[in-house]
Image 1 (spheres, rainbow, N blue to C red):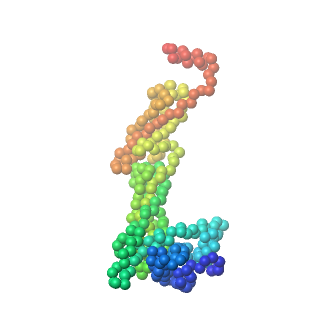
Image 2 (spheres, one colour):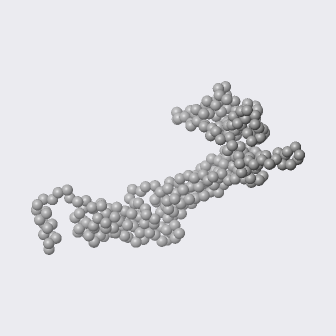
Image 3 (cartoon, helix red, strand yellow):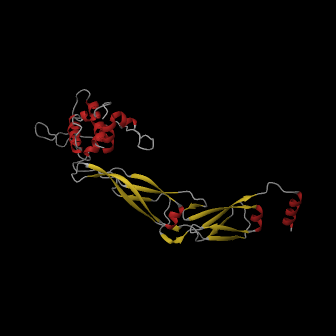
Length: 317
């Protein structure tokens, strides 16, 4: 390891062969000893902050591996990724030692075992920490799930690989493991549908793993836009067709070709509704919304005097 930068192992008073359990034990002992609430010596907060940063790095296998190989400079400045010439993003300490302290002890009050000389329990209020044994769940981890309109029309199965920290059998150490999450997309799901996998986030000895939540995001489609269970199709037509009638050919999401006759005069706000050709309803897939055809009219840029006269005659008859 490069000698540049601070020595996180020295900060925790351990050697470089320390196990994850050794790291936790050292942080537990020193953070209680140098917590500003119980120690008023000069510079104690700075000492407490350095302990938190050292634990934040050494308790994370990825950060620790980078630090062991490249030192503080490589950890915080980023290192080259193999093969593609890119650099990893550097580590930034959040400078919140109280947060790290709370996460380490979970819901336990770390001062509950402190007693006064007379044998009475010390009256120490620690920022609202609750009774021993209470754990707090990490906030949900939200990720977008981008789906094509066809996926939401038919339904589909999506498999997503996640990497998560899992506690080992000893209850103290952890390792990074991959897991496949399976999402069964139902026909008719809407934008914003939330799929929750309870407690699939990182595990820890003093926390309840976060829920992982996927949120449906609908990709744009070349032919249709969606409005609830209705599909909107836009047809571009000439003024001649708008006045004389025509048929619109629409290829549906399930690859059928519809020919929709338009016998009405198409004015700028006119639309044609085709029942039952929209999206399936998520609550009842056998029920479908409507296909709504809207129109954009192309007007001629100019007309000859003869054509203008013919149009006038047509409207006067």
